[in-house]
Length: 307
Image 1: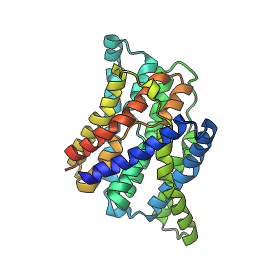
Image 2: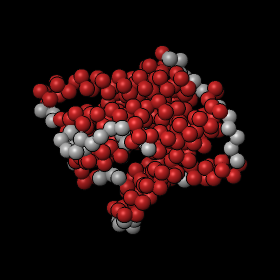
Image 3: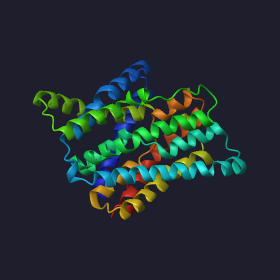
Image 4: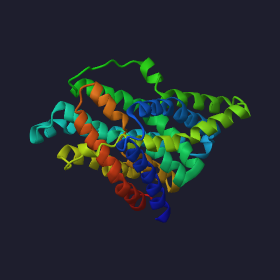
């Protein structure tokens, strides 16, 4: 219990610092955009590549873990999609609003997840985190675009394999897995450089999460905010825990699974929603509510389901 609370509190404090720096104007929007760009393009890929190259994938249930991650997220997404006609009739939920609710329910904040996986489960946690990225990041990106194309009202955008391969999470996973599988020897200096850049990803990521919080957009939580957040922070981890136990995941492996499914939705969902005609105001409220609420729900999920 103390370890979980300390880890969550530590991450929350750094996140709050990011919000404070932006709220007080100590870091300008232009600087945040540059910081975000280098974090996405350099720090995070370095972390993923280093973790996968160094990972002993035979020591973790990679196939089981990846299958459970994919199956849990896919099941939640399909159930929510099937419920849309009812949500539309009963509550008058519009297409753009549903696109935001959907993203809030199935996307995950990799920045928060990697911080907790590292803090709570060390090297094994980072290895399984990298497996989770390979298992669901491509599917989530494709699904989010398709949902926005179907339910959004703005620029529908285009979906291509090239665009997906440009995603830093995807290409870095491919590079890391390729080096790991082939056993290609890597120069010590290169791996040390990757380790240094990778270590910068955690504080950078949490500061960026904090900078994206918009407390003014929160207001009184609406039904769509509560629905999306309830699925993401409570329903999805409960579903994943059940499937994970059936698949034989226990101990730290089950804990990492809960971390990856119980973290709040991705901050990048706001940008995609705004560009592709979703309800961006609702998306901002969902992101903010989930980020704050997970300080309570995430430790609860780990304690209740991780034993």
